[in-house]
Every structure is written in structure tokens, then in C-alpha cells.
Length: 339
Image (cartoon, rainbow, N blue to C red):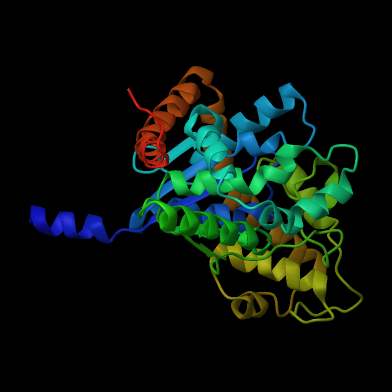
């Protein structure tokens, strides 16, 4: 029996995911990824980090960084991640991230880092703050992943290039010294729904605080959620039907289907004879109920700051144990004297 348990443990893949504490997590973030993170630990060895070190590559006020970080940490647990089973932690609480990042800089070619498209895009958006950290962001991301010997890294399409750089760095190091890092695979999740803005259904639902009525935030109150859905953009037709020329209705159907775990076709059949007003109200009500347990658990976690900090410490301790083993191996292979 013990041998079987050991074999099963060895078969479990390790998954690592990190999310920056910038902006305010939205319904799009929840239905696109966060809703499913709690299930990862049932089949994988799962680690989740609040990537607060990454957050300072753009200008952010200290008070905002602290609040965003605590909010996101509590939300990760509120959406279903189990801190006893999984490892959930603040990136800055594990110093090995910064240490390995510096080491990996020396195994990353300048031309490789220069080709990262996100650096070019973000530099255009903030030309007055093109800092070295923004340029070096992908190397820190590589350190995040390689520290934990992750097999799988769920990422958005815009981050795949960074995972490929991580693979290049890992292979270069392994080839120069000896096998040290697990070479990870970046995977674009297929389980989540792609949610768009309620006010502009052709645009992504963004985390920016200034998105107004187009964005549903996970922590919005029921009244606010209902108001935003009632103002959602639709079209001049009267049929609740998905289609390329019905972006608003398609987006609302996608949301309704996702929060109820049904197909869009099933959602369409439910509203076959409904008016747009009734449809939008029902989608709002379904969303309120889907987010209610998340918000309630979040509020309970945030009501006791000391308990939340204890969870952070426990998560960081678990993560640091794994990270330190990798880091020490790297130091020794490079040739640093260890005492």
C-alpha cells in the first residue's frame, strides 16, 4: 500500500503559477483561470505565488502595493486554493527568487532578453519609466519557475515567450554543468472562459480600476454587479443568441454558461423566449450567486490580519524549503564556496 502511494506521488506533476498584485481581479480573471486553480492541487503538486517583486517594474505606491498584495493573497485562498494542501505564498517572502534571478542573468544572453515583446510594448506605454527591472522581468520569471522544478506553467498567450526563454536558460545551465533544472512546459489553459468588457464586448475585461461599468470585480457588491449587468451593451436585435455580429449577447451568454458550468447552447435554450432586460438580470443574479462564497470567504480572511499573515508565513516556509534546495545546488555547481 505504501509503495503504491509513493508511486502515485512520483507521478504527480508540479505546477507553478504566479499573479501580479496590480489592479483588482475581475470576473474575467475568475472565470478565465482562478476558478479552476483550487482543483489543480487534487491532481498536481501546486504552488501559487503573489508576484509582488514583479509588481514594482511599474510605478506603484507603497500603500497600494501592500493592499493589493494582501487582497490577492486572500483571494487566492477564497477561490478554492487550499493552503494546507497547496503552497501559496508571497514571492518577496522567499529571498531565493531574487538570488537565483541574479545568477540566471549570467546565463541569459542580452539579445535574447532584448527580443521579449512585452518589454517593447510596456516601454511604449510608460516611456518615462523604462527601468532595468522591466527589461529583466523575464529572468526573474525564469527564477520563479526553475526554483520549484515546475513541470507545467499555466500562462496566457502573452507570457509564452517568457516561458520559452526560461526553457532556454534551463537547458543552457543544464548543458554547461549537469542536469539541475526541470525544463518546464508553458501551457495556455483551455478550461476557462474568455470574458469581455460589458461596455465594450470587443475588448478584454481589464483589471484597471478605471474600467467603470464594463468590468465586474470579484469583490463587487451584489448591488454593483446588478447595476453593471443592467447597463451591459447588447444590440438592436431581440434574440438571445450567440453570433459573430452579436458580441454583447455572446459575452453575456458566455458568462452565464461559465458561472453555471453549462454550454452556451444550453444557456441559449434557457432564454429562447426572454427579453434582453430579463436576460441581463438573470445573468447578473447568477454571477452574484457564483461570487458570493468567494466574497464571504475573502471577507472572513481579511477580518483577521494576524491570521492572514500566519498563512503567509506558513506558505513562505513551505516554498522556501523547496527553493533553498534548488538554490544551494546551483551555487555549488557554479563553483561558489559554501560553508
